[in-house]
Length: 556
Image (cartoon, rainbow, N blue to C red; front, side, top):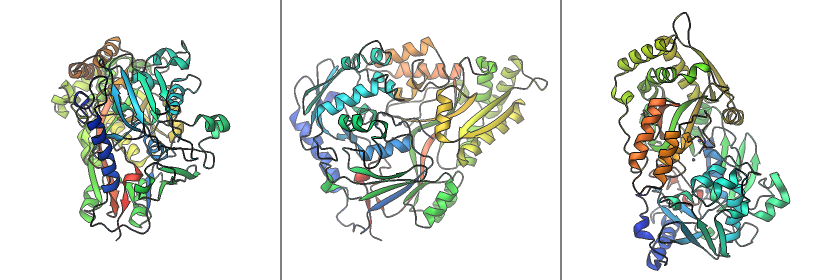
């Protein structure tokens, strides 16, 4: 998802779990029971629970929305996963477990998935959750009238007719989704997609209450109006300050939910957030850049770092509104080469992040980063090559390269931008101006190509390389730089039809390294201060899809 912003084939073997046209009843029961086991057994027998079951955490910015079909950032998606529940969820290791669906069957060519919905799933107003709620939500996500930032995700899932509907060429009721009855939801794909079930954990696919949306319009997500089907309901939202969600008594598994209330506090300054955490006001906050080594020594049980399925990059505006200099691949290559990523990861961030020379993080299941020339060079070799390329492009001390780089307001983003601009100044003589923007203004500027070089970050929507590489497809809704490569598009399309897409993904990464439409900077680590009284945080889930209903607070 767009952020900072978003299950691998190895996690759930479709060939072993679902075969043919019949239910594998034993496996369905097995998966369902494992889900209940997580709910009933996520508190060890020797743990004494705290009397106050409130979880409070910090977010950097006001989230974009809590509408499942509109939200586009990580912090908003965290809220939506509590308020709403889709077909499938993830456990603490990122594996699929039942959500509203207790299981699914798939036809012989893996193009028709049929989900069985639990009969006791309810909306917070007591109405039953039915297959029609999913039909409505998926059609709504694809509908050009909504203009969802994530409508492209429906096409990415290969749902039949999605592309034509998004382009306005077919009506939304031709989308390949159908309610066979109240508890049976059928999805028809235009092509077999081996990781399709993993994609149903994404917020875009969550059900939506048609009657409530039609009654309240754009205000349907406000506290008092909103009706949701997840473990929590939205009880308070003060824009720019706080958001509160509390247990939903109508949730089908409410009796196994322990956290009573989850509070998200918007704190723009990460150092202020750390101070408030140390004062006991927060249960979780991000570690400010550069402070993890100190904090891990002072608070060894609270400072944690683990791999995340996220990348950090800068994107060039290659549209007609972008700088003419960036149309020259030699300029893009020079800028990418001359960044000393080790300084950024080891000196500025110092929290376990890794230098990035590919767009796709190594944490993606089954992904082996391909060798690219830049990764095999020393920094001195990169710098020498960068100077050579920039000179070939016609830039010199008498004609310096000038441009603006923008980032959303954050102390860490500022430190990284300052470091990069200084590297370019010292090594290439480039004159770079810096500009920061508040989150929503930043998203709008990026989406409308109102930038020259802009910060980007992406957290995988599912655990497979295409969740990153598809961002650079010429038709992607998040291809903000408007890079276009017919070869790359074709490779991504071929990958979707292949039983082994690794060679296609390798070639796509090589095209990115050759054309450099984006500058990969580093791959994320989850670097948190986490209260020692917080139980069951899913550190082994690289997507960090967490659910308040699976957490608990321990008595001190």
